[in-house]
Image (tube, rainbow, N blue to C red; front, top):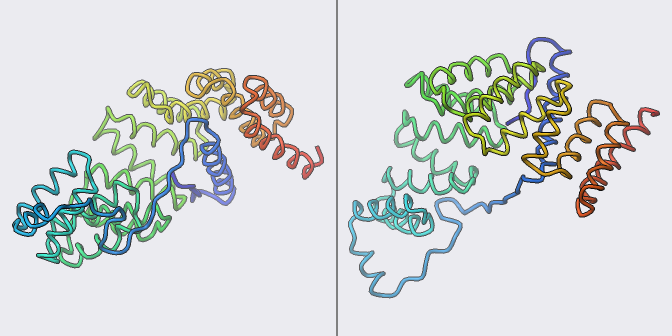
Length: 319
């Protein structure tokens, strides 16, 4: 979730920014977190090469109608084969360059890959052809949000909600956008609307809980995050958010227990050490980080980096 900066006061803004950075930084320290990268495709093309075709297949594809190409493209997309789906959508666009279903198919492939930059030209072309397309507006809002362009994201998402005020995905993305701009109160209002629309959604309760973490309302955050964990007990990210809420609320033993369950002992102590460090509890931080190394010597490099950060903070503060 993006780093917020509340509107209420300068002091509240600073506090929330610091907490936002703390939470984001902590996410990168979680042992269960994996990193992925995407390659930007050229405009209008899929980034993966098309599968090799023999002459008979090539001839068959050339004879297929646009409707048949779209049918098979969508079938392959549903079956989890975006590479082959992209071939069919591209062939359809060669026959009809402004075919909206084929453009939507291309955009969805790029969106699923997380290549929001690559998807932008496709959705912009769709919007040029259909100025009120909720699907294109939603996708453009999402793409700009994940690139940190909050003003543009809000503009597109608000246009979706003008057409469908209770559209859940638009409400959620706009709430995340307001969190990104620092208007956590506006974001919370949207999350609360979502809770009434999707009361059984763990993701909605998780996002509401993190929003309240940003505002420093830790006890309320715990309530929301516990609801999210109860709805989706196996979600590690939600468990870790709950652990951070307990830690920031001063309930370290419960935080450590959850971290241990979701990440393992070494990572749990490393995370607690990091949180202690950010709270200025340097002695507790050092003990926790040393326990992380003791619990799993192979975890040494990560915990050692935090010990080095701790020493630098102590030196700068004369402690």
